[in-house]
Each structure stands twice: as structure tokens, then as C-alpha cells.
Length: 427
Image 1: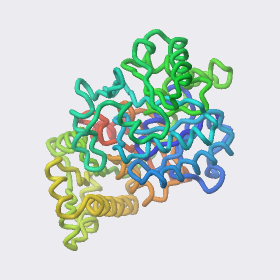
Image 2: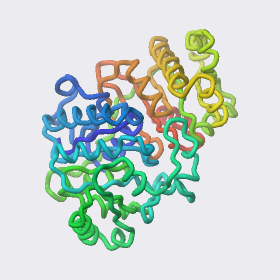
Image 3: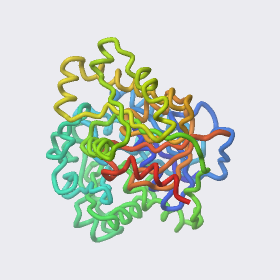
């Protein structure tokens, strides 16, 4: 294996794996740190990259560090040559967050002197200029992320955000150096390291920038970034003669069966996707956390209500809500309790859907995806064809695979739910 990756949530892991597959790397995603070698039906000789998906984005720093170091040790035993710590393209991490501590712990374990920090993903309108992260045309702190229920992002300047979490000095590689190309970026790395910096936020506004950054990091033992920089890493391995050109890295088995959508994200993008589904006249069932807190078995009721409808076509089960409604629920139940109630209910629904014959399942939201794949006891996923930037179809391992699309809350077009299922029915 060439590249070993550690992702801090499950949808982010598939986002990263998607970019690697699209660049010709055969990629497997594991759910958590495997207890032994890869699943028996996975031939390690047929795998170029492994992404270990953790559920650590919002966990306390010490816990996230321990999980990430355990993942690193497994990837090192698997023989990986370079390592990648993947976080969200909106850098979901407050001053108490764990991106800095995890990055520094991985650096120490690998003997890395300097590592980049670059969540840019221009294809999905995430760009960095002078250290400031933009979502579309607005700074991160003016985007919908300012109201995120778990990681509200109030500062767009990643140098400040990362420095608040980190013990070492954080520097900047400005876009003027990035635009000048690989050698200029390497020179800036050297200057920052000489000045005592340990982490370097790197500007990027185009895919060409990401390729230049990746080339400059070819010898780095550790890369920390969103999924964007990954588009350039396969080229490094190819130029080194370690990776052949491939056009079949995204092949998945064809799976028949019922289909459904589960949505727990409350992002702007997912709210729009839920609205599109309902406006198009499709069946949708809302899961109300206040009703669950009042003692109602919302999951069982939803499954019973839709038992016959599922046979006629896909059904959406959603806890997605507008920011003001989410805040109202959190005020009554508490942030952690509200999230836990919803995750438990949606995980229960996922198990019920699989028992009812669903074999094609779309899941929206990082926390929701984590709860669902854990509830289904998924151990590994093979990465397949892209639906939208950052979101591929995946297939579980085993003799009877299930197709899963694990979507980050902020990703996908307004018709994503409909489009993703229609893609499977094309010849």
C-alpha cells in the first residue's frame, strides 16, 4: 500500500477516498481501526490506499489523539509509505477543537518537522486566500457554518484558529508562493521551518494550486488537509514509478434491492435537498427529537408507517431542520442529548431498512453516517463512482454487499438525493 489516511468522520473519509479513486488509486475505507488485517474478501495486493474512518471530529482532543495514533500504527503495519490526516473542508474545529493536537501528535510519531494544513477544495467552493477560508464568495465566519450546532465557525482565519489549538508555531504559505509553483512552495516551507513553524496553512484557490501543493509535499511523511490536496498525491506516486495508470479503480458490484434516504444533517445544503425531495412529491417521514424525548418510539413508528411505501419507491427519513429550530431543540434538551437521540433513532431506522430489504441507502451528515455504519456493523467499504464532488457510491465488503452513499452535510446539488438513486438505475 502506498497511502495511509486517517479521516475524522465517515463522510469525510469517503470524500477523500473519492478523490483518490478518481485519480486512479484503488481505495478501501475501513470503519474504525481494524482489529487485524483487512477483511478476508479484500486482497491487500489490490489496494493502493486505505482510509481509516474515525468518528473523532467533535471528540475531546485527548481521545481524538489516541484514536488517530492507533489508526497510524495500523497503517504503518500495513506498509503505507505516506500518511494523510483528513478533516473537513470547512475546518470544523473551534478553539477547543482537535485538529491541531491530532496533527502535532501524528507529526511527532512520524518524525515530521513541518506539515501543511490545507482544507481547500475549489471544486466545492472552498478556497483559502491569505490564510482565510472562503465558502463560495463569503468568509467561513459569514457562511452557514457560523450556526453549526456542534462546531460554529466564528473566525475565517485558519492561522488564528489552528494556532489556538496548537503548541507549535503556525505559519502561512501565501498564494503568491503557491501560484509560483512547486519550487516556490518548497522554498516557503524551508523558510517557515527555519523560523520555527511546525504547521503551515497553505493558500489555494484552484485545482492547479492543489496539484502544485501536493507535488511540493511528495517527501513529507504527513499531509494534513481536506480532501482537495489528495487529487495531486497519486501523481507523485506515479512519477516515482510506484503507481500504474488505471481506469477501473471505481468499479463496484451491481446491487438490486429497495432504496431509501436517511438525513440527519442540518446544513443549508441538506435542508435544500430535503426540500427538493418533498417538493417533488416523494415520500418523506420526519423524525422529531422532542417526540423521542417525550417517550415516543419514532424509529419504530416510521418503519411501520412506510413498510408498504418502501416497496413502491424510495422513502426519505429525516431529522434535518432549520438552524433556529435546531437551536430551540438544543435549548430544551441540551446539545449532546439532542444529537444522541437523533443518531440513535436514525441508526435504528437504518437497521430496520436493511432488514426490510433495502440494499441501496443514501445517508446525509457526518455524525449520522457514523451512527448508521456502526449500527450496520460495516467493517470496510470499496469506493466507487462519484455522484457529486466529494460524494461517491460505496459498497460494503462481504458476499451480499449493500451500496451506501455517505454525504457530508454541506455537499451535493439540490437534487442530490434523487440523482444519486437514479444513477444506480442507469445501464
